[in-house]
Amino acid sequence: MELSVYNIKGEDTGRKVTLSNAIFGVEPNEHVMYLDVKQYLANQRQGTHKSKQRNEVHGTTKKLKKQKGTGGARAGSMKSPVFIGGGRVFGPQPRDYGFKLNKKTKRLARLSALSTLANEGKVALVETITLDTPKTKEFASILAGLKLNNGKKTLLVTGEANKNVLLSARNIQRVKVATPVALNTHDLLNTDTLLLSEDGLKSLEQLYTTAE
Image (cartoon, rainbow, N blue to C red):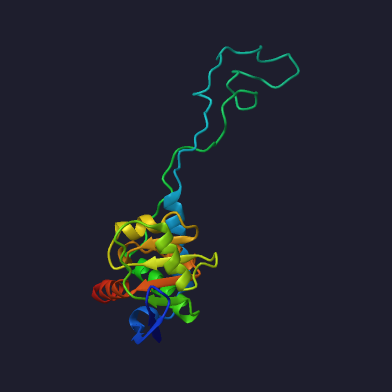
């Protein structure tokens, strides 16, 4: 698959780059993508939910009434779950929702997501973006030149972390900047356009062709 290279003004430079089939030509595996997204979302959960059990609520432990002869059910403590203010049975407790996922599975999931975007024509290539100072207006004009200011989600992948680009993009809604190392399947599947800078594409190819 070939992509035309655009400059930051949105003009076609006349150059074309062929995407690697080892990265963008993989047969997508929906199940491993599901697992990777599931792990990502599970890791976002704080897991700090907590309810009090009967040994943690405040209340008397004195037997409320005699065992027999009242015509009602026996009761031994106000902390019983059957009473208002009592402890909760099998309530939520703090826990870690994360789970293990094999390295090769995660790698296949990301390659599947990249290939899915390529198959759907959602990948664009731009020259390396460099900004001297953080300027949101300047970055917004770059997106406008590339016709990516339509309110849809854009994921920009740069070769290395660029503070000026990151600061310029963070105030623009539906735009996210990442490096190849920080890419995850959730963000890839949750974008409308994957915008690769030339150095970002080079780093991406180096990352996945050298990986086991």
